Image 1 (cartoon, rainbow, N blue to C red):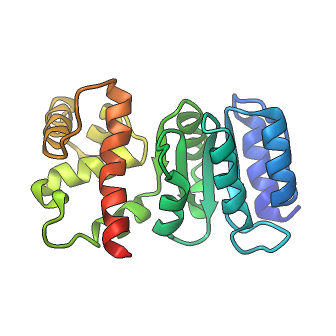
Image 2 (image 1 turned 135 degrees about the vertical axis):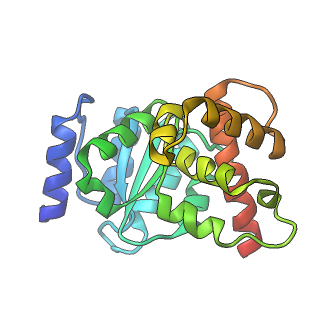
Image 3 (image 1 turned 90 degrees about the horizontal axis):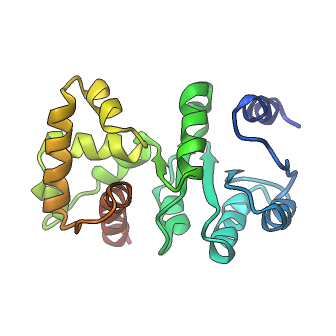
Length: 212
């Protein structure tokens, strides 16, 4: 096991959620995940045997067969296309973090927990890349800079309180911005957490189509 993998394994061993299996390659990952059906799987994009996108492809196959299993992808590079390939038609329970974020142990464990519960945890750099691809006629043009910042923080899996602290505004202001962006993106009334996932994925999907 490489040093980075050993460090990650130690973090997960110390986390509240029990680790049911560790996998050495993508084939083993797919087999064991389908056998154990955990709440969440943490996957490196580049895994043996090919060390290209083997881990990502295994994760996509898991979501195809068992969409209720949360998937948190770790990657060395910022690849928005990977996010879109993973999301598919089932946005709930998806996370994508750059490996450097793992150094923030509390944030990483929070991302694992959030994805396991059906939420999303998207790396802010990925969100920034997608925001940077906005084009004329993009529905995101309807959002103010502050609403975009709230949406980006929401994509990181932050609660309203967490967003307020990161942007140095009141929680009431965050709630106002969230309500406004739901309205502008035409996210219909539904379960609050579900609306948050839909809001994030609305612009992710839109930007992916525009980029193709």
